[in-house]
Image 1 (cartoon, rainbow, N blue to C red):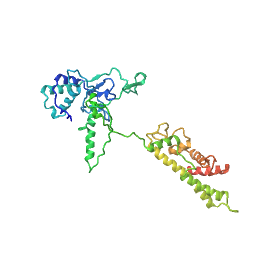
Image 2: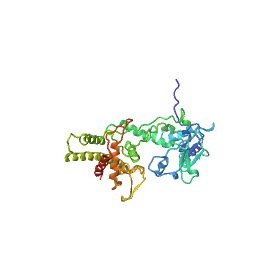
Image 3: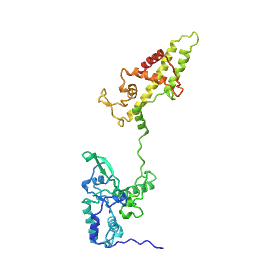
Image 4: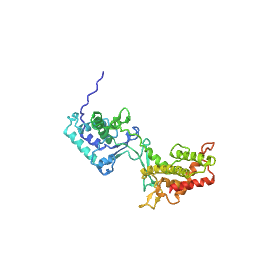
Length: 388
């Protein structure tokens, strides 16, 4: 059975180290599609970006050195393959014992070549965008048509800092998570991508570090935020045909009305106590409506910053935005946002509440309550007093 050849240091002319170092890049288009035309980009510290997220440019702003990589493994027949040259550069930088045979000239060429590369920008293959590379249109003021086209490419070196099999930050974190019992550390989930195919060294020396990125779930909005938007645009749903406090209050009133007001015993005269009970039953209906509004308003305040800012309330100091859509009826808007309630609102709310109480259901148009004009006006008046 054939045995694997043991790796060893190969003698390479110092000038080839300098040549390869001058062509190393931070971004390599072949990591997106190995069949794409060669494109590579190397940034310098002037491209640093001081923002609170992780990227190549933000690391440059923190004076961190991000490893460079080659963007193609082609070389003339009389020279060593680019992958071999890069591998020996990495051996020397990482203190690998295999780099012990390196001569002083080789070491000097490697260090000087990398120092020169670090301080010079280098683009290759950027004259056009290969059709195998994706493009995104991003809005930008001042550009023709208002957009600029961007091609997303991941930095090989940034992935090496995070996912290198030995020294990557995520790798070390997960090793700690596996070996820590007293103070548990949450392990970061990683996916498996086949970047580079069966021979990833053909497109870059750090490509294997790109094959296990962090796996995150898709962002989700909290259910309460979705509910808050529904309240903002549609209002609180109050129905006499749905189980709940409002339905119970209306049923209690209907039962009292049927027994005492509509079908009293012969010769019975409605007493003061029965009138007081009627008032309490109607107050319970109004209380159910107000409670539903208060619960909705509490949720709307919780997400006030995320809701549309469509209408200012000038009466507040300083003026604030309303918690309900201006397209909703006034009585519903004020039920959701108590700051909008004025002297006309109790009447409007009582009329709407009676509509809810009289609403039919289903094909048979079933109703819990039937009122003539006089009884309806009386009920609206009594509800109005409870909304004041």
